[in-house]
Image (tube, rainbow, N blue to C red; front, side, top):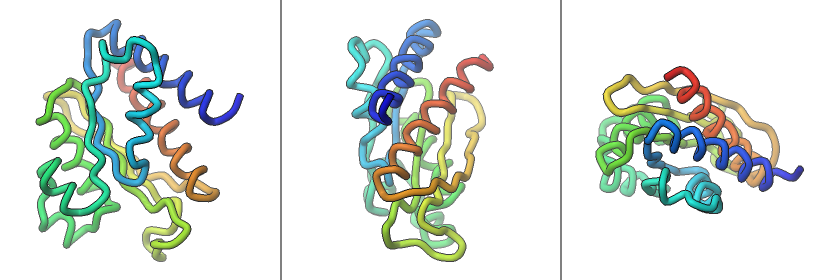
Length: 164
């Protein structure tokens, strides 16, 4: 099974779980550039569980589209736990019941000693609940990092839904 098939299979599982709990997913994506949303909408019937999403690649898009504070971006940077928390909250303001947000360094350039290429923060939040953020370091090229991010984001949704 190739990565695309794994992502689509995982999105299908997420969709079944969301439908069973009558919840809608909303996404806030930076380094994945909409790939989570694309994989979700590849699933037939996804309109019953996928609300939509924001691709907030630039800092201005994070501020305007997701209400991320300029101060958060200047103090912590776009690739940070704090920014991803605000992205999750901002996505939920748009609609939906569960948000997933991702921000990271997909490479091949742009990394630093503190945040090397492959460093990705993923956050998940259910309406009315605290946000959970995890830092990952994924190996590989840009495509591999983006695909690993999608799989981890979807896995985190499944884990969150299993605990409801």
